[in-house]
Image (cartoon, rainbow, N blue to C red):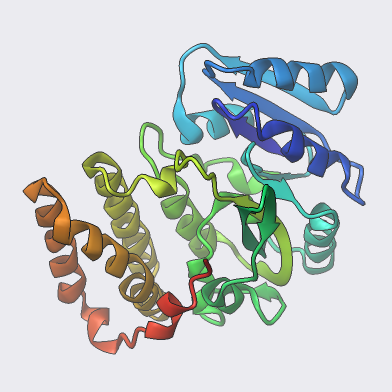
Length: 306
């Protein structure tokens, strides 16, 4: 597993404990301190001193999640590889369920379901599997493709998947941008001979109460631009691969889930450049040939949990 983190010392112990609690104990993890100013490096080093399955890599200057993950990829020598952000947690059977699917199918990678956890009454509590995640991973399918399961393209996070290591020989994350995993995820779906989908929850994705995660910063223009670039790039990957149904599925989700909150921000944003960037993106979507086939489900946005 590749575990990058920056200034997440308060969350790291839970992430590492979730690895150590795996029912499948044959794992190793590269812990990457990406230029932290807090005690993240020290927490990683203590863990490595106590458990030889952990290896620590330290970046003096932050390279971002893309750069940190790329650095970790250079050090992986196991048959399978996956990613765990240092503020998230694996469910106890995650590695076992991932590897069982790949051993049965021979596919290039497997994608599982995930839930958010939020701080409620002093404890992080998991929510339910959201409708778009369920649609992307259920029912279980081994050895499938985007032609058969176009809605799989909605599962765009790096940490919901386990891959055969060789699949990453010529695949790397973009660096210096946010939302670095969206384009890579679509490349995974379009390059794979086959992939697996399992409805099992494999990751608990922590929503930080202080609002410091990347996904909570979409009200700033630089993050918005990275966000829209990632959405554009993912659509282009699907188009280039001739996956028209997957393009429609992505457009449906973007129209139902991504655009409404961005539009609400834009309506009151003090910078007109924010509104202009979003408007240009909407115009691009309308110009796509697949747009006429879209039928976004408004209930998806309504189902977004607390």
